[in-house]
Image (cartoon, rainbow, N blue to C red; front, side, top):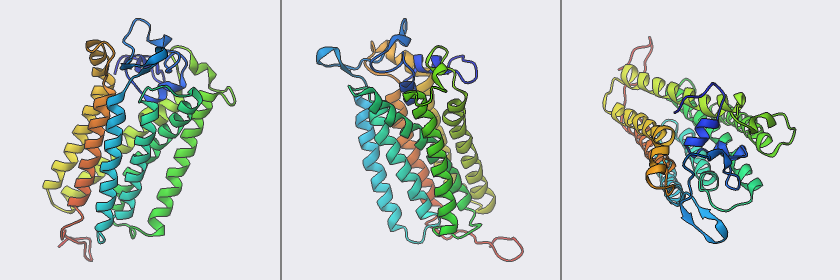
Amino acid sequence: MGSTQFGNFHDFCRDSTLPICNLFPGFSYDNPSGYEGHCFLTGISLKDGKHLGNLGSILLCGVAILVTLFLLWRSERKQAAVGRREMQLFLLGYIIIQICEIFTVGKFPLNNKVRIAFTGIHIGFITATTWILLLNAIVGYQLFDDGTLISLLPMSVSAIALLIGTGYIALDTGLSWTGYWDDSWTSPNRHIALYVLYQLAPLVFLFFFFVLEAILVIRILGERKPMLYLGGAALLFALGQIFNYIVSTHICNGTNGKIDGALFETLFTLLAVVAVWVFWSSITEDDWPMPVAGGTYT
């Protein structure tokens, strides 16, 4: 990921294509001065000196939207599945992320304020959607009835709060509504709030999702096969992050700015989401041991 101090985005933006970098002058489409001396994603040249930087990511986002719509439909057909509505909320959040990614990571000519608006929505939904995924793991323990208001309302309200809070900070940073975050515009682009909400919080939510699901499958359901899907999802997600944060600059240099790691991050994240859905489907479609009085399982 490069060596940066806590809260600094400069090196991340210099070496990777991240949506948050659209908020910082120097790493925007119209002002790439922050890449000086390093590879800048140019992709396909267009007229008037413009370029289409990330056609591969744009196309993969379209594929991801179609695949996720199919998973939504398949989820709807699983009438008796535990956490069906909650899983659909996660999938809907992922669809919105992919729509935003077309405009934030796609690197095509677009009004800068419009790109920043999509960036704020994108960042907010990343935080909110990973939070929803974590709550999906808790739903699996059936502490309360899934698909009911007692489950969906707290999940939706808390996710909306994260979405609005994170999105507002991102938009205020990029559009300078209050000027409070303007000091993050210059190197080293230090922004503690977004570093926590965008970089760290989603990782924490994902970590506890995998831990809770592993405990559910191994200790409560007493199964091993679903762990292959869960482990595969974790591996695929990690590969996507490695390509985006570590390998990206080498791909960019090797292709003279034609592509970078964002293309592979989009692909591996899609595959990770599919693996998570397959994992969820595998633990909800069969007759698993059910709890009885006394806390034992039969």
